[in-house]
Structures are given as C-alpha cells and as structure tokens.
Image: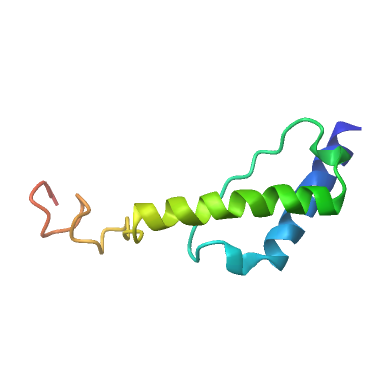
Length: 88
C-alpha cells in the first residue's frame, strides 16, 4: 500500500543521509519531501538524486552564513534582557 511505499522511501533517504553525512553542513536541519514514484527508484538512483542536491544545499548554507542562536541567550533575540525591545 501507500504506507509501505512511503516507509521504504523514508528508509532509503535516511540511509543515504547517514552514509553521506559529511556532504551536508553540520547543524543544518533539512526537510525532505519525496515525490510520487520515489519508491520505484533503486537505491543507487535515489542516492544519485540526493547527492546531486547535496551540492546545492551546501552552497546555499555557505551563502547564508553561520546560523544564529535563536534562543533568549542570544542578545539579538527580543526576549534577551539587553535587547532594546525587551519588555521583561
């Protein structure tokens, strides 16, 4: 059924990311949306697709620069006591 196909696609994508973790920026959260028919691809075909995208992901992450801490420990966060808009 559909659930079986979705689960197979998810397992394959997770395994590809696990094996090629070094190709993706550290600390980056990715959302992968598989398209209809993904479950019909072989592991090698899906791996090729994911690795092609890995170059784009790495380039965009470099262009975006380092991630900032969105927590209140970050002085630029509005809830931090030193932020000008803080209403503590």
